[in-house]
Amino acid sequence: NQKTSKDGLNTWGCLKVNLMQSQIPGEIRGFGIMKMETGERKKFGKMNSALGQPFPVLPGKKMTVLFTGGGGAGNEVIYEILKERYNLHFADANINRIHPIIPDDQKHSIPIATSPNFVCQVTSLVNKLHCDFIVPGVDEELLILHDAFVSKPEILLLPDANFTKKMLNKYDCMTSLRENKISVHITYSVEEFLNKEQYKFPYILKPIHGRGSRDVYLIHSLAELDLFIRISKVEAGDF
Image (cartoon, rainbow, N blue to C red; front, side):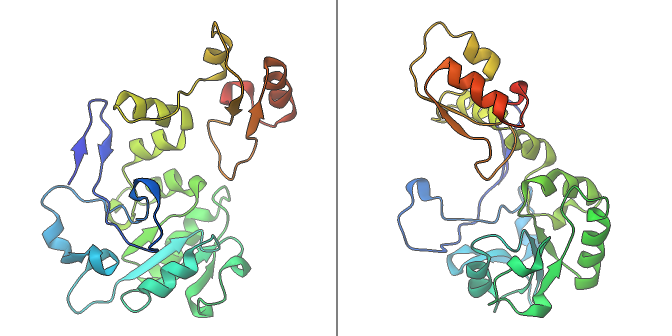
């Protein structure tokens, strides 16, 4: 069910899929955020997250799901768990990174998100495969796909665009979590940090946008802060 917090953030019910039995703090073992408003669940058919079904199950139809970022870690596990229930396809800018356990006819090459051909080729693939759902797996794709499928948002397994934009900004994300009484580390912009009266080093410096631990540094002094900002390719205002 959808809930709206005081700052307008929409949160959606997560359908847990136990990909592993290991104990992970906070029960972070699920995937698949199903975007549906209260009362819409019935029209999608029976849900059974206990059996590891993160997508709707419609009688008499084996649904087709496209995962982008198909060369990322863990997609082979998703394939093994869900291959009997769904027609699964995996796309990546480097098709050779997609795990060999996935059949060749279920692997697809697409451009990187910044390519001018990205939207055209993804929509062409979606139409060719008759996809029921797209599961984007790359940060840079999320808002682009929101715009590309604005007339058919139900095909994307994503929160709404405003929520996605806020969560892609690490500073806005942490600020929103803290405002909603969720325990997180105190986070400063560089400007706020430089205006602090006291420091208790070390601190972690990381860009507001980005992934893959790029340009993430452990700093022990203001001199190191200045140094790491200078040697990185990120503007000071983007930390």
